[in-house]
Amino acid sequence: MSWLCGSSPVVVAVTVMKTAAMEATARQEHYPELKPVQSINAHPSNCICIKFDPMGKYFATGSADALVSLWDVDELVCVRCFSRLDWPVRTLSFSHDGKMLASASEDHFIDIAEVETGDKLWEVQCESPTFTVAWHPKRPLLAFACDDKDGKYDSSREAGTVKLFGLPNDS
Image (cartoon, rainbow, N blue to C red; front, top):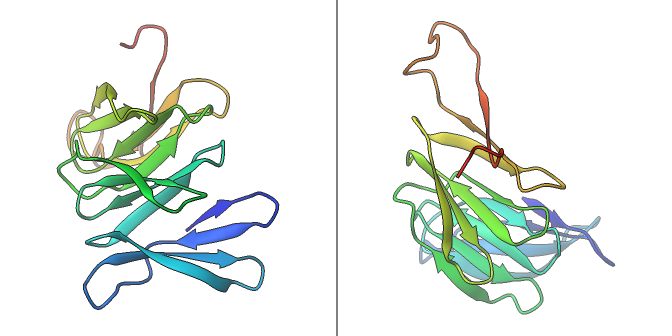
């Protein structure tokens, strides 16, 4: 679920409904009564995540089909798809200015795309699958957490690591 805050707050849920044709559906509902407004077919398989850009212009959905779809909020049409991941999309995040979209999965990299063109800006290499990504609220700095239990970290401890991309020495 995700929220679009504006003159009338709207919640959009993407993971709870499937049509008879096995297509994931995005539902738009008015808050607080959660009255359905409309429903759109978003992906041919389960939607796993959804995020609105901070400008309120787009929302992105990530799916088990390994696609990220970018949707126009006003028109409710798919503007473009990003297909650089091979595994189901687990997590999405828009940058503070809405110009970049980070997406990650069980692939050992994070895809960072330019929202307006779909072009790949960076491919952040990871040693394991990524569980979550989040852009800093005011800077082009991406925090992410991976499944680091196998590898150079102490696998006997229930601990995780948060990593950063966008520091001055990153490229």
